[in-house]
Amino acid sequence: MDLHLKRKIAVVTGGGSGIGFAIAKQLAAEGAVVVVTARRQDALDKAVAAIGGSTVGFAADVGQAASLKALYVQVRERFGRIDVLIANAGGGVHAPLGQITEDQMDQQFSTNVKGVVLTIQEALPLLGAGSSVVIVGSSASMDPGPTMSIYGGTKAAIRNMVRSWVAELKGSGIRINLLSPGPTNTESLRTAFGEHAEEGLAFLRDKSPLGRIGEPEEIASAVAFLASDAASYINGVELFADGGASQT
Image (cartoon, rainbow, N blue to C red; front, top):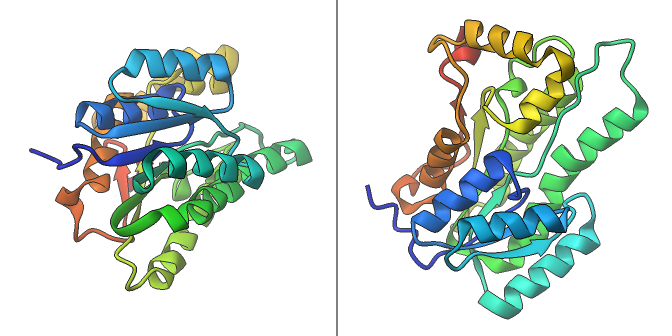
């Protein structure tokens, strides 16, 4: 299927590794001009080199409005618009009730909630009719599991905000959707489990109706579809890419 992404200007936050990197690579393969952001310059440089093509990278922290304003100034000066915006940057911390710290709450809400709001809000002047915003959520929005209450709460908050934003953007021609992955084979997932990584991955595989966790490329394909003109009548949805695990 031709997703009609050739020469589209796409911005992908948190594109230095994992799912974000896979998304940026997929969009570039579909012919988009991709702007990748990450906080760490070394990860950003490696990602841009690996993706190749017309990809460019800018260091940015989605939790800081000034950082995003600076990013979009550069995007405006270089490209003049944004056709596809992927709000991907995010992260989670495992902690059971009774051991949740203020720093853990602040960190997750700053990136996963405030970061998404700022990423989209600051980009609005560059988004026009026919543009598409895809937020990378998580199946934790409805099925967080033990020790992931704060992370799940941030992802549920995003889902509710999208319901409001769709109404607020009525008439603009801007579409906004959520793509919520289930457990995905990334380094960050393994790191989150720490020394219990293999045990944790086995639990997730057993929970899945497909008997496995996802691959970043599978999530990237779903994001590319929602971002594309092939999904031109899809707006305001939360699409789960989790092998059916959240539905059981």
